[in-house]
Image 1: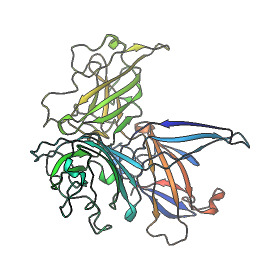
Image 2: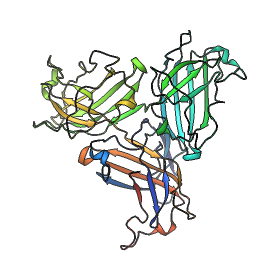
Image 3: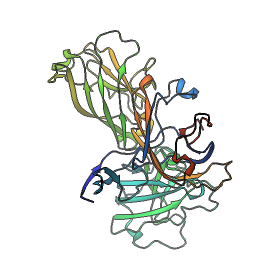
Image 4: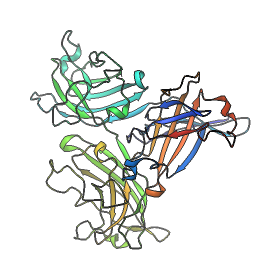
Length: 449
């Protein structure tokens, strides 16, 4: 080993359709892997052009939200092998799927003085009976009486995922798969406080994947077991990986580039922080927007596909009566190649968590306010990190490892790039299948299930 360079890949988490990925060995499907969330070593890879919609009626209807779940911040090493100089990627650890609770609000019926702040991570591992969430917290404003957890008091000093999906209403009961895990796994999950502060982790076998807990409530309890704070489990970051001309646009502007969509807040503080970089925008926007509605705008819209009407701006109209997108716009600058670009950012309080805006359209407008370009808010890089044998497979092969799925493009150019590092596959696949073999021999495919 001649050289090791350590660096950090910093993207964040998200969710999308709970698509399964089937692993075929020989001509039989032998394993199904869960929606997981981290970047893998590229031991094998294949690019699938336009693979997102084949045989999927919901996708054909315009649902382009992507795949699986998004990856977490991680470390990897790039090393040069001393023998042949070939660079090989190796990970120091295997981070699991990660979602976040970015902020807390008082529980809707709580009238006490405690006010919890801070954030939490929710890391997913396993599948079926082994599926679990490892929750990590760094919170301030918790009950100082939880220095010691009272014995015999139900939910005292607890931190739990609940069935509910809103912090405006009853969070309902604890959330787990009672078919796979008969007893409530949250009953013993508690925190210890140091004054008003608590820091800790807990692994909870719930029988649920991280996709299944997305958008559910995280509830913090006091020493009496009362619910004092509520947060929502979200993908902290989404992306718009590509743009395409708006379906009815006939002008000559062609926008390219993309955007990051960071989630913040909860209930009436929830919103999106947009960070965009677009080329080919309207040069008339060089001095900013006019007084015309939507002039030089960059907005999230209600629509969920770029093949039709994107509908109006998207925000929680129950919470806010005024359109928060009305003042969000860009300025165009000329780049070295003569094209007009915009690189900017804006925070927009929409009343929606990131789970709600995922899959919706991002629209770029020209100086007149017309819609010129469309992209889909979606995951960018996801990973599957747990396998079980396919439900009908009775053989001895036992697949383990992980597969990453990186999304790109939009509409007809939408694609998934698969990269995998797997063990336990069919040794007969050391050579390519014969021309007359089963079409699925040695395949790794995303399925409709």
